[in-house]
Amino acid sequence: VQLQASGGGLVQAGGSLRLSCAASGLTFSSYSMGWFRQAPGKEREFVSAIRSGSKYYADSVKGRFTISRDDAKNTVYLQMNSLKPEDTAVYYCAATKFGGLTATTRAYEYWGQGTQVTVSS
Image 1 (cartoon, rainbow, N blue to C red):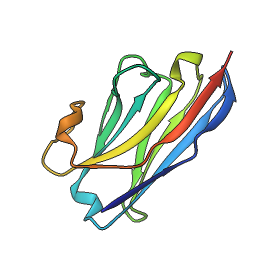
Image 2: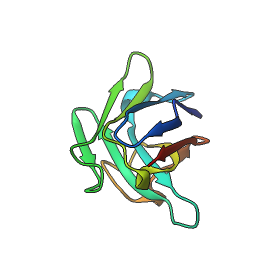
Image 3: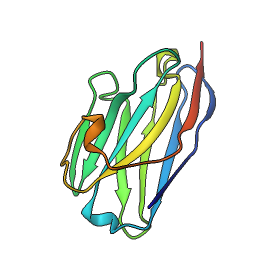
């Protein structure tokens, strides 16, 4: 199984980025997909998850970020709008088959390599 995250970069506060995570080696539609992030010196934290038509967001990103998936392309997306400097982190995508729609890091079996998002003030 491989998860390949992309789309990170440097953006000014108030700007937008769209992250993508392409999955291979798994039956994508059978998995919940999640996005997490980790800032320097901090623990990895939940951002958002999606399973079928259900979505789940951390309070810190609700109303600004939108998760979506395209099962035909084995890809999950994270549209990030109104970015803030505190959104700066490495963003990881993850997959879980049996964990459901969860924010629990250890429920996810597979992880991507991460993509850096930097928001300048």
